[in-house]
Length: 43
Image (tube, rainbow, N blue to C red; front, top):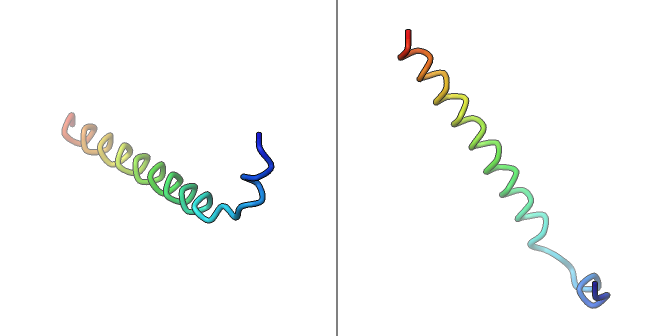
């Protein structure tokens, strides 16, 4: 809880956030695609 960290510009914070969001979306899409493939194979 130091004020020194707030004074420094956090350049990596938005980049890490975007990477995490992109990874989450990619994982969701891959899970949906894998589920559809399993359903299609089951039929």
